[in-house]
Image 1 (cartoon, rainbow, N blue to C red):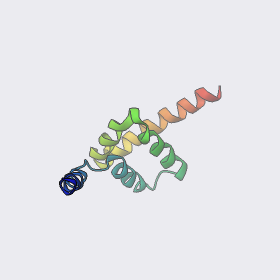
Image 2 (cartoon, rainbow, N blue to C red; image 1 turned 90 degrees about the vertical axis):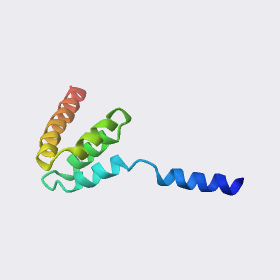
Image 3 (cartoon, rainbow, N blue to C red; image 1 turned 30 degrees about the vertical axis):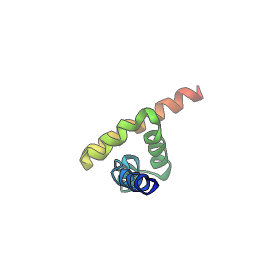
Length: 86
């Protein structure tokens, strides 16, 4: 019985969904026009539980779509940082 449980557990791990956040971070690293701090800011944004769907969107966009998305999100992040400072 224990062997069956181990096999089922191993099988279920192999059927796990792909690492959407990891894939998004890999794509993010390809955007060399961003500074390391901007990539970090976007990575932190994508890692938030409330933004997990954003990582899926980022993965599905074309390169041009990702650039637009990045520009929009970086503007939002900068505005939020400004509000916190004031």
